[in-house]
Length: 102
Image 1 (cartoon, rainbow, N blue to C red):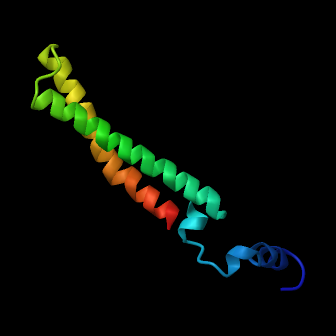
Image 2: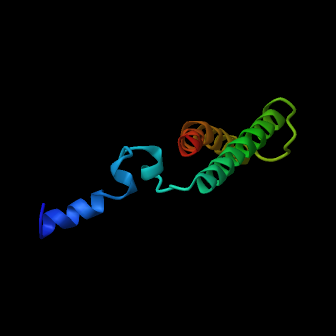
């Protein structure tokens, strides 16, 4: 590993990441600092919480209480967007939040 490409690669890999797993959540999300990781994790959890509360409110108000007085097509589109956002928050944003925090 004397001179040339080998020493360059060795110097790149001899950093702090050499001892850690290259496939860990810290290196995948490129968030090495704990305060930054926890800030992003808290933001993602806030997004999940607000999506779940808001989308559930829209769905309950439109399905159970018939609170919206508009055409059926527009109401169906609003309900579809709420369901899609709810699924996206639970299936994509929540796992990312938990991965960033871990």
